[in-house]
Length: 278
Ligand SMILES: [Zn+2]
Image (cartoon, rainbow, N blue to C red; front, side, top):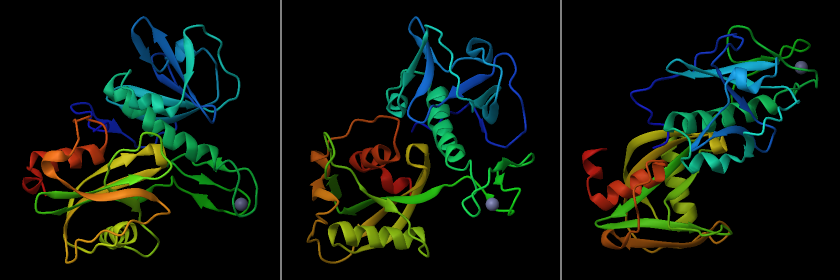
């Protein structure tokens, strides 16, 4: 998965820092990111390459590499720089650690952009000096980074896996049931509800597998395996899905991509070793 960057370590603790030589600069203009191409190598530019004095916000570190978000609106015109969308981070053209940094910075950059003004009184928000939090000096409103929990659910019945295809997506492939947890629900409740809403089936023996931060949609994903409980008949939720089927293990099309939790879960079902992992 893209977030497995071991042996390198991700350090998210907030510090009120200013950039220095060698630090990486993430510049997001609301649509695209600035990256630097140097021969075959693509990376986020360093502070000295970026060459704009301020303002910056410290994001996180990966080992000793510190990442800063550029929060100004004047952009460099260096010819080696180009703009890429967040889809670029799926293309694995940068190092694994830098792809992870890009997706994580995307999540934080979106949060900073949507919290410049107070949602209660409309005044300009200020960054706290001690923790990653925005507060309103007028009314005292505080806002912490938003992470939306969601579930990915692999429902199986013997050697068959319940897979679905989203509607209105280009090149839709069979994937797993997924959805956001609603207010007042546990993750297990969300898994039961999503299975029933999307396919009309009931589940039992819900087993947690592992989680994955998914900054592309501000999400923290929790993966579960579960067994069919009772009637196998699928009723497709047609507003959201184009199709849903029980796919026999040998017919599952899946090549390991080392990127998404969905792929990881389908892959382990196909290998038939998932029960050793849950
Ligand atoms: Zn306020």
